Every structure is written in structure tokens, then in C-alpha cells.
Length: 235
Ligand code: ATP
Ligand code: MG
Image: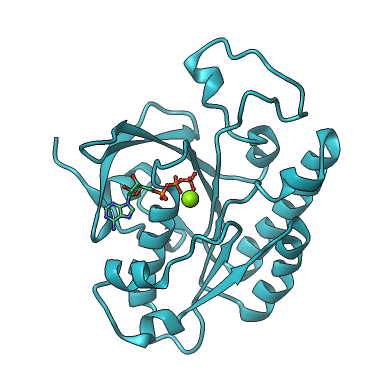
């Protein structure tokens, strides 16, 4: 059986079949404010604590949008010590080329956990149509080799696509399902083992929903966002 790492939220661990699987890519996508980055922080904080005794860097966090907050990680981990942050290497990428180049650093570091918050957004800046898909797929192929060769779980996050289709052409949204398609989702699906879609249920009550989209099943769970990060909720 593959090694499992916790997300920090039991309900989400259960959706993922026990937690984050070594050697696999788990894709978390959803609308803005649904908690993708907060989930990354929760995974990071909880596991940095577990890896406290591991020598050197244990987690690589690729930040494609400049939203990494170290103080939030220590808050989630209930730990003000520098040991927690010393376990994490943040790679801030400003372009899709930076993101592609980050693979070299990751292979050198050999982390036990890899998080890429915002996998596709930088690829939409310089590329259009099929070139955009091919460049992203090539990057995902390399990430999947990292997952397999290092035997580490890889978590990526992604946005919901806008009214422009993946090819850049206007598209007609016919249903809610249609409007919640992932940005370049079909290209990512080839390399992702699990897909988790996050959505906001009640913004005022901080109630959110996670649904497993891949493998296809009807499983879902609710969560909230607190001082401790993504947390279980009792309904
Ligand atoms: P985007 O697509 O814009 O990157 P996202 O899915 O990454 O959005 P997050 O930034 O993870 O969204 O989540 C934002 C939500 O987390 C907001 O609803 C905010 O209220 C909540 N949140 C952030 N920090 C805290 C905190 N310390 N305590 C409680 N809730 C928080
Ligand atoms: Mg975010």
C-alpha cells in the first residue's frame, strides 16, 4: 500500500482515500476564494510539523501568484519555531519558464511533499490554443516523473475557466456543470490521479464543499476555514 500524508482535514482525507498518496498527483480546483491556497497552507503546516525531525527541506511549495504567507503556516501548525519554516522551500515563479525551470530545483532538493499552487495560470499568459495545452502537458509529464521517481505526493491547484474557452474563443455556458469546468482540465486529467473540486456554500458562515471529480464517484464533504486552516465541520 502506498504511503499516505494527511491534508489536515479528516473529511478531505477520506475523500482522497485516506490522504495524499505517494507518487500521485492530486489536483484541487475551484472558484476564487473556495480555499485552494488555504488547503495548500494546511497541508504544508501539518506536514512540516510531521517532518520536523527530517534533515533539511522536506516540502517544496511552488507559488505562482505570490500568495504564500509564512505567518499563516506557523499559525496553522501552532508553532512559532523556525524549524517549521526551515522544512519548506518556497519557489516563487513569475513566468511559465520559471515554473518549468523549477523542476530542476525540485529534483535537486528531493522533497517528501510537493505543492504547486496555481498550476496553469502562468501558462495562459504567453500561449494560446494547442500550444498552451502542449506546454502545460509537457510540464505535467515532468511533474508526474518527479512524483514517481521521488515517491512523493504532488498537490496542484487550478482555477475554473472563464467565459473564454481554453482555446481563447468565446464559449457559451449552458449549465452550472459547464460553468465549473477547470482551466485546461482535459490536458491536466491525463496526468492527475485524483481531482477534487472546491466550492463556496455559505460565504458568511465560512461553509465550503469538496467533491471528488476523479475517479468519478458521488462522494463529497463539507469543510470550514479557521485559524487552524481547513477544518472539519459538523453539520
Ligand atoms: P483564488 O482562486 O483567488 O486563489 P483560493 O481558492 O485560493 O482563491 P483561498 O485564498 O485559499 O482561496 O481562500 C480564501 C478564503 O479563506 C476566504 O474565504 C477567507 O475568508 C478564508 N481565510 C483566509 N484566511 C483565513 C483565516 N486566517 N481564518 C479564517 N478564514 C480564512
Ligand atoms: Mg489561491
